[in-house]
Image (cartoon, rainbow, N blue to C red; front, side):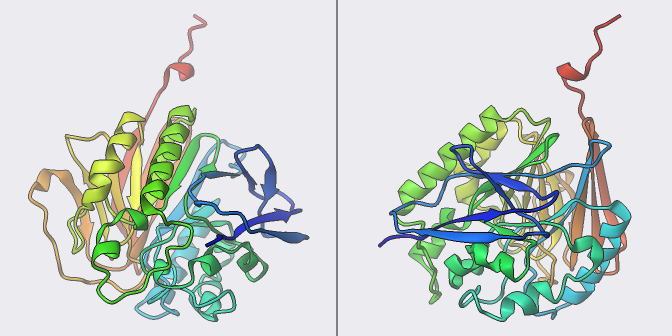
Length: 355
């Protein structure tokens, strides 16, 4: 079967841009004037990492919000979380929003014209501060619908904020965010789908897709010169909530992240907020999956010294980054601060040897 390869061209003002691996540049932004879709019927495994160039503030910093597991037409406090995101986003003057997946419940989008897109996204996140690029990765519930619809650049003609790809990179100069399509890594969706139908177009054959994804990620991380490296995926590498650790990611993904000085791994999937930091890994493991339905009432973690924060309810996360500092804050559905974590990093290139 032939997969669909879409390339979208925008003429925009102060918009983020994407580059394909040949170096071509495509603009993506809220002030789009022209969009042309080219459809190429060429067999292709969609694992290549496109790079999106994200502008940073004049002071050299970036700030953004992280939300996951949210698309429920405003129900389960989704609208209340969105309201608080707008308030925090305004205070921080955020540059963009990251979604950790499960963007449309329960079974993804039915088509490009599915009203769920507007009912669960465009009509919910209406605050002025949230009218920035949204970078989205797919979750397992998204794979239960028409994946090609959710990935289609045509959605940007409905809401230009929407930037959703399988695996891609957001280059914000001082930091790079590497978005990884984690759903195809999970064996259970293939071996025991429990009556669910998954749209594996662009993924099959699975083994080749995973090998290509891991190879491209490892190469991109190794070649990155960003001071901060953040990897975003839907599934947790480490979690105390109902889904627990994802063994496939522990064995296949984690060694690559640790070998390439990744600072954060950010995920959703478990409908909670949590921060795990272990002595066995330099990576901070952060879950932001409280965008709507939560309160699972489950907790299982055997080393309490590693669990820096756990909250079973709804909420979201913010991240602010400068050349030398990073600050992370978790908020609940009322906008209350639940947990803060800060770190600093001074690299060799920052040192002044002029004296």
